[in-house]
Image (cartoon, rainbow, N blue to C red):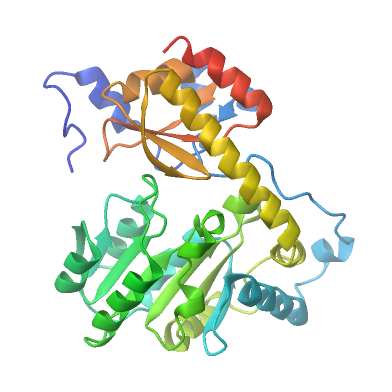
Length: 348
């Protein structure tokens, strides 16, 4: 989709601002250079990261000093296997963030074109394009399975929160497998909607699942994720990333958090309430909430760039999209952030 798609002709300012939209959330140093706000002073709502991170335990100095222990890595993998409901025959690989893994997958999956449920996280199309694949943007699972042997989707989707039932995913995977294909499911945000997780019902299916640790646990800087699925693909990926795919601190903290089911349950309740509160606040300002998950909210408005700019000048960083003009995404603020956002929205 062209950057200017859906914009009034001659709206050069809006076109320029969309062209400068960051490829990802965050990027606060660049935002500081543009708006004159110190990095430490930003309220960063440009990502879908839990504003109440998992409490950091006192880690052993050896977690930083020594090479990661293979037994500790195996314990982390087993915690992920239990936490995500991975079938016994499926392979699990720990990786330094799911984004790292999605860029390796095109080199390991079967040959053929790729259909991506769109619009969605742009990193998927970038990765498959970089590997020389023909990428087709599709609107439904049925269209994707008809056009390509490999189908990629995010569930729930980023940025609109569109959800796909596990039964529909399994049916799609079977249709693809009959042609030698595979289904790739990015479950980066599924921790807040565990009923959408396809893994517990994926035994024997040609489904590769990506899981992000940092978003739900609020520890994106730790760079930890997992790839789960058939051994011919996930096992090959595990061999590619080597014996020390993630750091000692990531192993220790990741295992602890994945086993902490009480914290997980409390976090889901808290995030659900915060998502409703954020949606209500935005709609009270006259902005139309059209989607999201319990980690972010999506707004549709022809004033998306203007809203983004107005908030940025007040030190609040949101997410606009060069390929989706008219949309702006808000991550969840913490308590002080809610008060700051409410005050800033009064000027929108």
